Length: 503
Image (cartoon, rainbow, N blue to C red; front, side, top):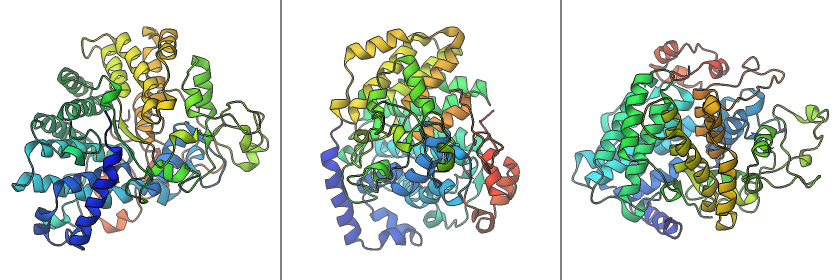
């Protein structure tokens, strides 16, 4: 199934050998478009996959401090963990977009250009690269709204130094088209072992591409239901993920920092990373798991140091407010994340079969395809419970525990959308960008906001991350994009302005 952990170091060494032999080639990409033809596309694909998984910088800030806290997976009292207090740190909010254009977008656009315009590579490689491009841009536009897309990454190719900001609607329509065409190009060939997701398995890439299409289609459910239905039906008919063997993730190793370490692990792994000890599990997350008898609780949490019990911390507390908190006045009254799932060698998830099946359940409830919503819902839950074996076989739940939980939590059609939303939220724990996006689309799970003193959103959960304020002066197209979205010049206030699909 996942055969890649032992290959990552080999591929990295190959990348380093390539970088050494071509010394300044990556820098030259900004000025010499002919250099791209000399880059081995296998190494470049590996490199861009690892960069998409990300390092400590953006995973810590945009992923954990903001997304996981706003979505109430985690809570913290440390002042710099601002996400569940709805206060503003511009560098934290813009961390993903700041890193992505330099470390992901540039290389995937260059790779696609090389595969499209030269005789290097094959059609299957191009199809995989196009699907991966959507993985990168979907996260960016979901978090930041209108972003540079059609001209992005083309400084070396077309001399575009200040790419135009495109509307999220146009970006989504093109991403869906890219997925359709990318899946259609999958055949013989591919990246083989240089592909850290599936080792070049074309059938799994086809399911992944269709599942991404379903995710994007459902993101349009509230803003353009007819388009959402058409693309959802197309994705499901094409074949989506239905086994944990289909899950899309990178297996990391305790290798060089910023290359093949898990970026979340670099933040939370005390033995091998920075070891930030501030976050605890949110009481919203823990209480819901307790209420449903969820066996994942013993996987994601460890008992608190003071009580020996698993307990979640309320969101929106600082150290002073914690001292007045009736459920616990010390951070050690609350549970940490199980360190076994946040190591530098832990897998980084991009999409799972559980997500695909839960989205199929929602689509079926809407009458958008002929599948049975209850079956998709039960399958999604079972797959989500089974996915923890990816982190460590010792964490695998036995079939009896999975079946018992599934049987105890059947789909109730009168409450189906809420149930699906809560389960999707649980299934995307540690994939915090996706958890935050699906919550904003659906309004589920039903989270209670906090009203921390000095928050920037009038006590409402933020609905996007803010771009880097430098864009207002550096990129001439920023102003029109800001006007189109109703953003204004006050960047903290942007976090209260919904993106296009968020209705």
